[in-house]
Length: 224
Image 1: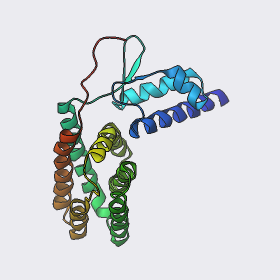
Image 2 (image 1 turned 180 degrees about the vertical axis):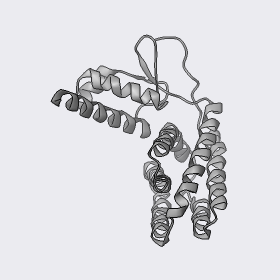
Image 3 (image 1 turned 60 degrees about the vertical axis):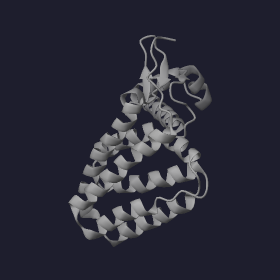
């Protein structure tokens, strides 16, 4: 029915809007999200925004409280490390599934994405994080597993604000060519176990860097 279709479209619009704001760090961890304000910003009613917030809570990106308020999920130090541990397993699986699809065209695209990431390293933190995300997303999509892709994307979104804090805290330009080139070289070798191990190590080695430069937020307690 038209109403159902319209409502679903509004919910998706609200979901994407809030998700993007979370990724860009516009909604800081532990900040409160007010459905009415968001609805006004994007020109929809409150209901699709509430449904979008429920979806985002399922993704682990926001926390819905018993008093119907909603806050942006923050990470404790343990949760930050857990995020990378989960990512290492999921992206390791994605790489295993992607390996049969690796050919010269894929290698060429990865090299291109790595060049863009390298160039962005001398520019803004936003550019570098976006290019870094493009590189990893391209590999994950090669797995051809929609649910796996969504789960990995949710983990990336949670950590992105901390990636931006980290980038803004380090000396520039940043270079991550060696680590990502090692992954490309593992793809070239055709060795599935090697490629899986390289991506796992790459992800796990990033956690201490963010822990050093970012100050994770504790889970809030109580009610508003």
